Length: 369
Ligand code: UDP
Image: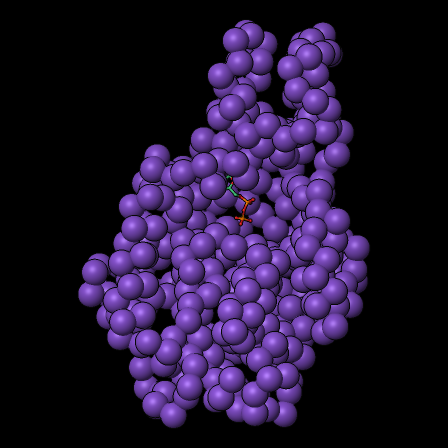
């Protein structure tokens, strides 16, 4: 494969570096920040609580290949994520499921809705909220509107700001109605948190004699001329000096708070679709069952990404943005013919961690051909 330069030491860059390390002698991984692991970065604070600096990361996949691969670098616990939303002051499990229906509505109405749902759909299926609203039944329309109003629309406005109206199905499909009593947020075969954290897992992926990691090093200041292949996991608009204008991203401000008590809330994740300016509160000690008299929470405030002010978190999925990305990809590939792109930023895709690793496999295999 020759010598390889990888820009970005997040989960995409680290997986790719690790895969390439079997096939080539020299791999350099550079990252402009002062740590590895990208937005998966975590650390134990003074209370012994594992903090996810860039927001909660909950690993879940049904891809056995990805799961087996990551288990080479870390054990995982069997944490299964549950989310409740505060709706009319009550904690209701989301995605909205049969338990949620029973908690939100009087018994007679709940019975009727459950019965009608099972007449139209199969038990155990997930119905994206949009499909659901087209049903010609007053009770089902009521349910759809209730969920739309109480779970979806205000949360989405807070999370995505002015871009929420042009978002496509990729986002709305993430909020299904789940015809089940399963309160878990994910139904994947494999779920869990790396026992020593994501940073340690990623450190092990990079810990090969032929991988050199350089932090605080940006691509612009780095002499890349001697490398045969370059893999870029960063933002393509920045790479091209924003020549076509900025690619939109959403960012998040995390307001961390420490409390002198064992727990702050009932579980790791409480969403606030309709109250307050933050979208949700995560309580970190739940993930690894950290023991401490104290607890640390993060209130999440969504905001637009502004270069130099905050970090990129979410590409904003819309047709116009994908077109802009495609134009950037074209001019970037012309300027750097030996460069390949991957990762949430490099591909401008709202990847979960398992998808980022699967994409690293794919890019690796393509490069090997
Ligand atoms: N969402 C919502 N209400 C909620 C939680 C999520 O409407 O209580 C929508 C919202 O549009 C959000 C998307 O679902 O952007 C995905 O949210 P999720 O928490 O699954 O993704 P994450 O932000 O953790 O990547």
